Length: 159
Image 1 (cartoon, helix red, strand yellow):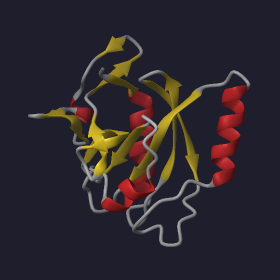
Image 2: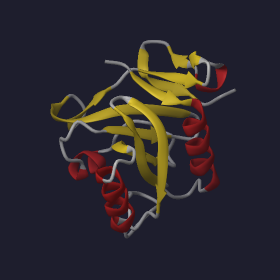
Image 3: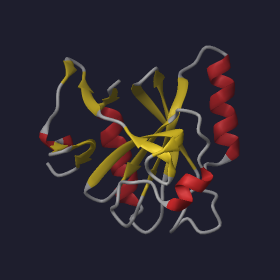
Image 4: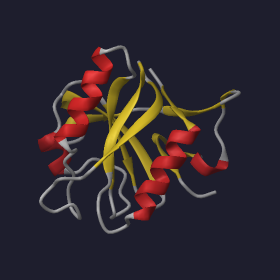
């Protein structure tokens, strides 16, 4: 199944990542099913935020509490890779639970989408996920998030 992302969410997350190029920014993706319509920024509380991320537990707990109260569902997480590689690292794989959640990874020029699963093809934990960009008028891919040939899970950030 193809995931769908709100264009405004992607633009906001790209801006967050570009505002802190020397460290990994992170947070939660919200929506319904495989439609990502929101995000919650979180502090990166990792010991070395230049090379890894850890979502602030207070942010995660607040989001899960809101979800139980009828709010948006937490459908995954996002973080940036200052190296520009939008693929999960071995450290990401070691830290990820095989819960089926989406992982959006934002590089300087590319964005990749993955799902955390048991026995995934990437470090035994992740599978690539094809995705589309939603606009208020429906699904549409634009130049700012153009598909990369042969890689439906990776998109370019160039306009």
